[in-house]
Image (cartoon, rainbow, N blue to C red; front, side):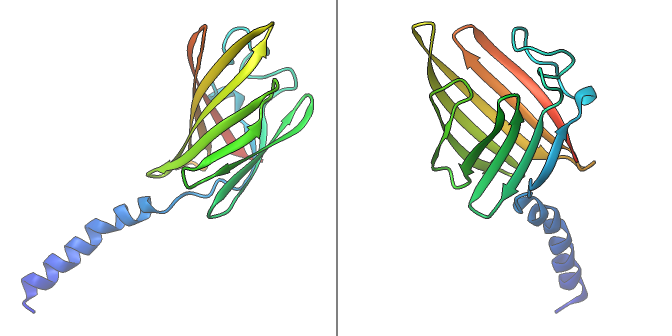
Length: 165
């Protein structure tokens, strides 16, 4: 091998390293608490102020395996657990206001994207809510969750930032 061939091969390897690092899926496991100052406030009519709900900042405990992501959320009504398959197949979880939520989660590079549909009965009317949640780990160690919700009343986007508890 000539000296030029060795340098070209070494350069190709070094340039490929960032792509290999991105190919690994991040691990969201741990206890997370909302950073209210860095998070968007809830949409009007969702309760709370300054990003807080009735019980204060949101808190998550996440357990992740190669095939599933389990999230436990502390709510005013107790702990709510949701489990999401990470292979793009459908997951079914209980909805916060009744009914069930059908979701599909898949990796988009280093981000986990979950699309969900919930149909529920509100005051005698069937209402469908569609949402897309994009979860990522940031360089500073925080977790960002951007949720786009589509309801009959329109579309809202909200960014929540969490730090390890």
